[in-house]
Amino acid sequence: MDILKLLGVFAILIIVMWAKKPLSVAMFCSIIGAAAFYQLPLSSAWSAVVKGGASWPTLEVLLVFYSITFIQRMMEKRKNLSNCEMALNGLFNNRRVNVAVAPFLIGCLPAVSAVLLCSPIVRKSAGEALSIPEKAACTSYFRHISESFLPIYTTIFIAVTLTNGTVTVSDFMTAMLPMVVALFISGYVVYLRRIPKDTGTVPDKTRGYYWRLLMTSVWPIVLAIVLILVFKIRVVVAVFLCIVLNVFVAKFSLGELLPFLRSAFEVRLMANTWLVMIFKEILAATGVISKLPAFFGMLPLPTFMIFAMVFFFGTIVAGSQGIIALAMPLLMSTLAGKPVLAMFILVMSMSYAAMQMSPVHVCLTICAEDYGCSLGALIYKTLPIVLVFVGLSFAYYFVLSWLGF
Image 1 (tube, rainbow, N blue to C red):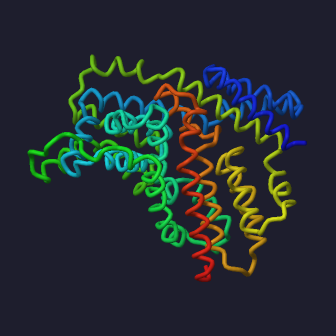
Image 2: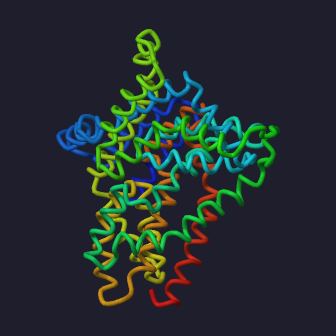
Image 3: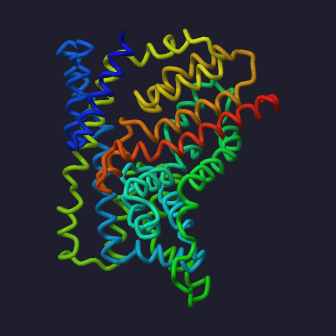
């Protein structure tokens, strides 16, 4: 019954979006629907709203969103993003590289609004070869590839920690490299190959010139990534430091900066982000997440398929951190004394793939709003890439298992 109620909650979300209502309205209706279907006590529902809407993780996400949007305005003002595209054209002269590599590199910045820095480059490079929802799907998809294997993301640390030393970070990163290649292959098979290679420009400068142009265009992003990775500085602090430094390096006047204070406050996007965080906590409060393993365990399927489904569908409902915290200890106890790495890579790949279609994934709502398309349209266009990647993930699992991992 609880699973049927969950389907009802997602049905509300889909129906409201199909009615072409704003995402904020769809999220609000889903929050009310979840609380009503599961008959949450008023105190429990209110606690979930407060936790999702006023806790530090949510406030930090909003602060990072604002600061990234602010630095985006600065980079647009100094034509840094267009210069970045020009540099990539000069180095590779390949629109497909622009669509895939630029979001991947910018995506190494662990901030939800990093997708906003990628979208101008993808829009221009993809041109008329892709529809608006397809451009949005490519932007979101390639921006998130770094999250599949880089240990700067807390999801990976949590998962590795829950293996109790059975899998190390280095083990995970090494074993995931073929899947990173698989992610690029999946994107190429579905969308990239439809984009013409030629940029229409003839490089007239040396490669050294274009490398310098690239670095001078994206140095604030590179510096923020270095501060986060090497010096372990929080994202919001790292981006703020880059903003301050960029004021002097790019010689911004007070008159130029003041309009950014207002324009960086994207009310619709921030409201959507806030409601997604509340929706996530409301679902957690229902307790349905903890019942997913038992539900899938009743199916007559092999162990690897059951856990793949638990992590995939659990991530769609609760996000990757929620299902990993719940199901990873169960997986470790099930595999006690057996090889772990192959199954670990499989479930992490499933969780990553599902996150690219989860309505509780804040980045998706931001990307959809930025492109002016519905969340449903973005997810629909992301589905083919995810299906290709899921197929490659199972193939890789069988290879690792055959090798004894």
